[in-house]
Image (cartoon, rainbow over all chains, first blue to last red):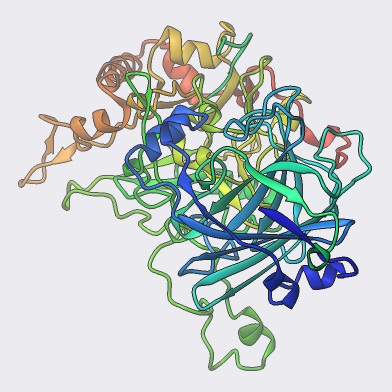
Amino acid sequence: MEAHLASGTGVEQLLDPDDPVWARAGEDPLQLIGTPAGLQPTAAIRNTWAGKKIGAVERVQVRAVHNGEILAFRLEWDDATQNDSLTDTTAFIDAAAIALPASPDAVAATMGAPGAAVNTWYWRADEKDGGRHLLAEGLGTTRTLDSGAVRSSGVWKDGRWRVVIARALQVKTSEPVAQLEPDQVTGYAVAVWDGAQQERAGIKGFSGEWRELRLAFEPMARK
Amino acid sequence: MTAGKRQLSMVLDLNKCIGCQTCTISCKRLWTRGDGMDYMWWNTVNTKPGRGTPRDWEQMGGGFRDGVAQPGRLPTGRDFGEAWEFNHNEVFHGGKGDKVHLEIKGEKPDWGPNWDEDQGAGDYPNAYYFYLPRICNHCTHPACLDACPRKAIMKREEDGIVLIDEDRCRGYRFCMEACPYKKIYFNHVANVAQKCIFCFPRIEQGVANACARQCPGRVRFVGYRDDEEAPIWKLVDKWKVAIPLHPEYGTDPNVFYVPPIAPPRIDANGNLDESKPRIPNEYLVSLFGPSVLDALKILEAEMSKTRGGEKSELMDLLIAYKWKEMFGGFDRDPATIEWTKG
């Protein structure tokens, strides 16, 4: 997939999933698979989820646009229920995330490893306007970095989520996060959690190993 | 997991609990008044037989069988019992006090944290019930700790207290599913799991847990499990009359109970019928395992000793003549400490 270059497009435009700029970007229709119960990090989770359906969301349409400074992903998927508040002890929230390798040998399925981090941009339906900038170096090691680096928006309508998750290509930090630039080719992966099915943590639909992402470096029209 | 150096424990004498809920309220006042904690009762006292809090928690799974983690399910807010709001303003300040009754706002509830109080079981004149106070068991093999994918739960080396690190917790609630005693709550405002902390800030200052110190019935003993000079070791290990609740859950709890002995049954002619106990043995075995029968035999033997005028170390311990001696050295008066909010 190519991240379409839309120079001069402001961040607020990018964060609007209905903005016309998104129609100009190519679409990557992704198949998601449930993370296997057997690979969950604790026996209690493995045994509670053995035989249960994991990965309620099986398809997600992904587009990417950058404006030379900010990279935004737009995700769209079917979800019959909008789970965006903690209404009960049994309630979980719809969420989605983009994962990027923070080093060339980072493995997506293990959420990285010590010294080979996976950088995640995370959206959760109950955190309006927010977004979490996360770093993981293995299963269960995810931690939240600087707040404000990741911005997001989500609209649920007619049984469908349309979500945008964005971050600056370059961020000032000493943490080993993904630093991006136009013309770069990197990998990306997607995860979606369906709150109605009590999906959270490692219980999610996942796109598998890295998909290719190329950041366009001149306007498509001039090609 | 390697065993810690020492383990703090609690023994509760169910023959002395009057169900007054002073423990519950002392805990509530101290620890669960914050946002998102309205429905939390880290200490509960329920009537047994009864469905308990959360409702039917004994059927919700979790814990271990033969060392294997068992699937568990989450209690709902209704299972726990929601924090009701009442029309206090209307009744007390609206000038309608003579027309409007005090009532719960909104939908009429069908459950609460102490809904089936004093119902019990059995038929008159042989009905029976007893009170079962519960806190987190600070287990030697905590299912919550094992279940957490974030390693957000720790068992302290120095005293075995099990604590949740709210900075690491992400509110996934796998611990709530895994705890077979269903003694972990979810704070929907802070998005973290919360539970009894065995009053560790008091313990660290030499003060016994609030639920224990405030108990008017002298029900609760506190102390290190291995302190042979103190009541815990004597009741659990020496006299073997204090036993854990549902040992079959496989977590090795560190809260122990002296099982209840009810008054004798009464037969059709109104005479005492001591051919069988009022509380069926099978019921107590279902709660405490088969060792409850041995504990009851020891208790009965010592009771009959004192009835015959003999001395009994066990009975003296359980009567708790000296209140401060119940606390295994954690007997400092909290009023002598200047507490600051850290």
